[in-house]
Length: 209
Ligand SMILES: [Fe+2]
Image (cartoon, rainbow, N blue to C red; front, top):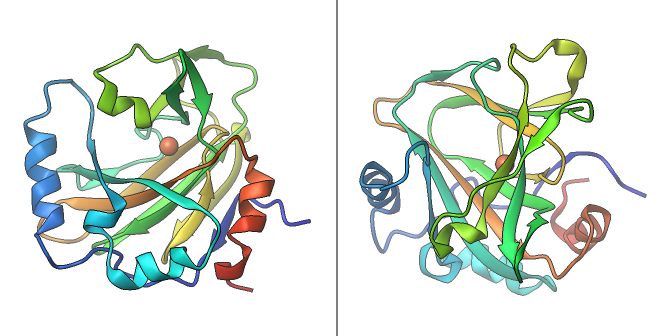
């Protein structure tokens, strides 16, 4: 049984289509965001993904839910700055875990995805924003001091499209070398109450062996 925290996927290195300048559009939307500290926006997967990516997922028994574009002007986010959280979405009156995402770093960026054992810290449940943000929010943890390395479970350098586990606490730190803004894309699925292990087995046809 495969049960790691991340898998490289056989997918194109650039997932978006050229019908619009999606990254610029995302930057603009994020800059005009009425909520503080939110650095991501949502797009309809069928609108923004390339035909090739759509075709690949059409061969797999999973429904695409949303594409999240993360962007920020910060060039350097250290592991101490990166907020540890686990992903949730609001459904039927309650926050539910989001088990996975497929993540792409679009520019010249050294990004690291880190997983943490936060079982000894108190959880901070999100306050609801307008409904569009119900698709993806984070449960944070009360840690006043910088989190110690002993709580780190694993860290991976994201160099290609990667399936990552998001229902356990994680953070992303990076160093961006490009001229524009660091931009990352995360594809989310209708998980239909599947667990991480179930999702890994559904996505197995595109997992690099
Ligand atoms: Fe996350």
